Image (cartoon, rainbow, N blue to C red):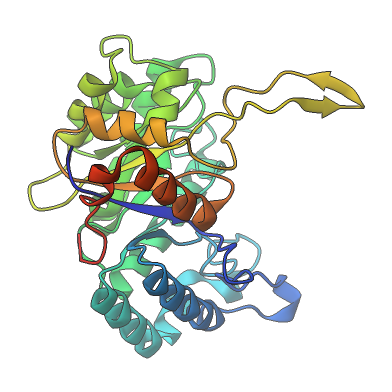
Length: 318
């Protein structure tokens, strides 16, 4: 199996819990400077547990693209923190951290509403500028989904491609697109790669929920996504397991929802991904238990696949 590194997204549950960004309400005057102070503690913890892949919050710049709060404009906040960004970026590089962001469900480049699409482009521009200001290399990406199909998937893909072309060159180089579990499969995002050159992030759980029409097998779909990444940049992928717990809704038992992420990652799901890979990977574990899930699946692999554990390759830059 290929060498790999594991990481997680945003929230830190271990070590008593560590705040990752300034989440105060606007009335309290939150600022990027405070987020950077918090991230320094997060980076120290990542080094302690030997995790080198980390997704930062897309709220690292508080209210940076809020249409009604221009005093929080992301360009102003980032410009005011130039020295702090330089210093934290140097620390990230010295620790071999691969950083990324993933704007949320309201960042929809393909929206038929021009104002929503414009705001989505601002979200992407903000995160791209943040990564640039940290001195992050080409491995640092801004992950986004296609968005809603709005009853016409082909038209939605057209709008996404047109919206992408309106981004700055900086943002275009940072953006990667991810398929989802309901609307757009791997073939759809590969079409966007063919039209725009955007890189593709493969997600194992999403592919299982919505297999690509032309690439139903994991290995074939994964290889096609990995081929969109340039030489010299280790591809990044996502992995998670579905929830299987009984739900109680209004006191009545209900079956689980297939689309939801489990608290922890099944080690066999991770092994299935690694078995399908034909090159080294950086893997974001999208589990509710965050860093605790990464630490647990490592221990699980020590039991069921110790030879794979030895190949993990944490501890160096991508």
